[in-house]
Image (cartoon, rainbow, N blue to C red):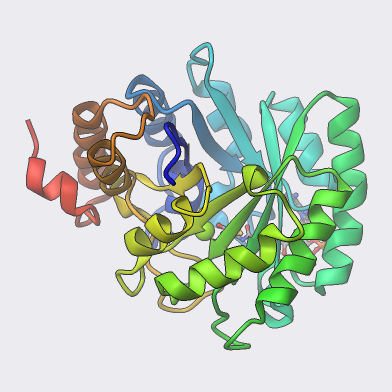
Length: 299
Ligand code: HMG
Ligand code: MG
């Protein structure tokens, strides 16, 4: 059965922009994007990433971005923190929540954060402990849950084991990343069934990329199984620097249109979101990855 409401986690300002080729996007553009998203009714915006600027240059202004936004009451502004150094930056910048990130594939973890899965979890322990001391909740990402660009097929049991470890370490929610968007609905369902044996479905989120055009179908498949948190990116912005050919996350507008049609509440204003989508693609000079945004058009 379908949930009556779904929480959308907007990752556009982070996952969407981190891999943008060309010039570094101006801090003011990032700030305006985040403010517009909150104004459209998004209650959770992943705003920045406290990672090495050598690895991800587009996120080098994380502190300035968080200092520049208007904080709308009721909105959570989150940041990615791969290590203690990142967490310290996030605390100083007053991020409301942080996220740690690993993967269910060894090769991807090496390419993305330069360590093994086991080492990544060891590195997260003090991050999670320190965040807790500061009253900051920690979300956990597990990448490559439906396939890895380097290791290929990933066994659902392996995904489940990493998710379980991150939950046990203190993450309040685990976001399941189809980083390269290779999944299909039945595969997504089987992966979810395996993970749900280890982590309650209420603590799981779907973070699906749309590389092969399967993201909406995959989302529908897991929402039917009880997943009620979905990560999306306005205009379908993004990709992943360590996953060749990965297109953006599923577009927020496309997911919203589907949820509206299913009668599932999100609290988001579709038209405001679509206008924001056209504004940011105009700023970046890139085409819009949302079918819904293209269909509704620019005012
Ligand atoms: P490393 O080289 O193994 O670690 O990188 P290090 O400790 O030796 O640090 C290297 C350099 O980075 C040093 O500087 C550090 O000071 C600096 P240098 O001495 O060379 O001048 N450094 C930092 N700078 C700023 N902030 C920090 C920080 N930490 C170290 N927090 C590290 C390890 C994790 C830092 C690196 O690999 C990294 O930053 N990786 C970023 C990876 C990333 O952001 N990937 C994209 C996000 S994940 C994703 O998109 C997937 C997701 O969307 C889900 C899905 O789709 O599946 C979440
Ligand atoms: Mg992603």
